[in-house]
Image 1 (cartoon, one colour):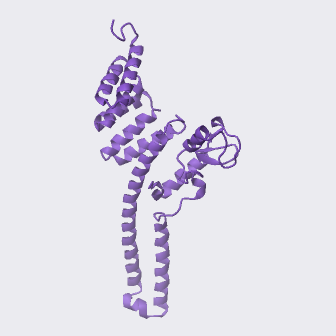
Image 2 (image 1 turned 30 degrees about the horizontal axis):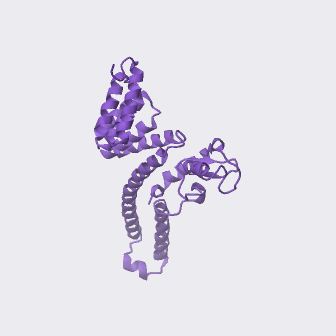
Length: 280
């Protein structure tokens, strides 16, 4: 009697999933795909079989197949962080940036707190940050060009209004030229303010983890009122000890609570300052 004979389809599919996982760890992606495909044939409504197979396709750069499997998995489970994540990667690969970013954002939101021992949130963040920074760079370059053209047009219009050329602007001190100079300076300040959102600055301290000094991805607050990056504070609790690294007060994983206020503040800041997505 062969392996799997006499087992229910669900149990056979689970065994095939385990076989696929074993092949995947060995780097035998073709064999893993065959195992997951057999599992899907037996139980087509289990999303994890589809996301596992999608990951194998991803390793082989078969992006159309990644997208197909992820879309099917999401139809079965809209809360599949892995499904949204890999779909986002597949869409980015074929230059569907706007939709790809939306999928990565969904994956990040679903991934927060889903598996404390997984580094998936950081992986998703890195891909999302890279995409968002590129998006900001393109938009910033376009805005800068448009602002410069608009500024030059406004300066020309002002000078024409006062019937003065550049030489007269430097030489005349009568009422008309003084008024023009004043308005040109005001114009310069207005356009400088418009450019400030695209000017690289420092991210405010309260939006950064006190350990990594990086902007928060998944902030959690402790009973002492301090906020840390979830993966970092959990690693500290696991490897160093069950205490707050700053206050030294006793601290357990169950006491960590998502800091929604800081999360929203980070999202608002990034919405206005896309340069803050820069990760290098």
